[in-house]
Image (tube, rainbow, N blue to C red; front, side, top):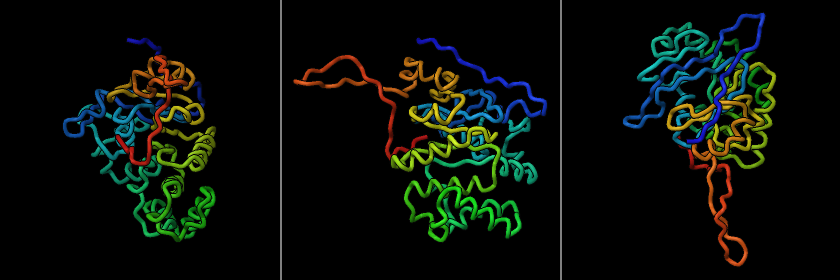
Length: 291
């Protein structure tokens, strides 16, 4: 069994009091019928950090994002948001629910799950409408956000007739328009062409220093150093390790064991097969939308 040194998140001195953690997950278990997605999971998400949840498909990272967004609730264990319980009961309280939805936004891996309005403008305006913003404020905010995401030319288009990259921009704009403090991103570069993926990474890099808490689930090791300050590695619904991107990426045995890297043989000249492995990060296609 390989040995690596898990790191604990720490908070620096701050004269302005804040909750110690944005999210606390304690001994959480979640199952899809007979399949255990989260297995007695415990972890913390501190404020203002960019966290990458790393893991192969089926490791539990997407399920965790749904739990953190209050879309799924554990059968065992507890979750808190800024020290308050996050549960079905708490979200039935309209004051807590409105405050939570204003502060936390989730962008799904598959944007088709998220987009349902007749036009792009309506899609981006939906969140502010639910928060009962004044009409002029909504119009200004939507137009500014469309400019930021470089999609003002799409405002009258149906989101369902856009490319995958455009859909992801619209989905992200629909969350960012209300300026949430916490962003939960599920495989933001999945199924994108190279140019769209590069633009998405540039956007995520630009979040550095804005004070937002950004939690990104991904199995793309190539982007981790750009988008994250800390990594949490998942395996079978549990935390296998955590640390800085450099520390995690240096642990080849960890990455192999958690199926973030795989080895295979190459046939070189004259048909000679070499037995030494070459490691590659996983790259999945548009149809690979696993949990």
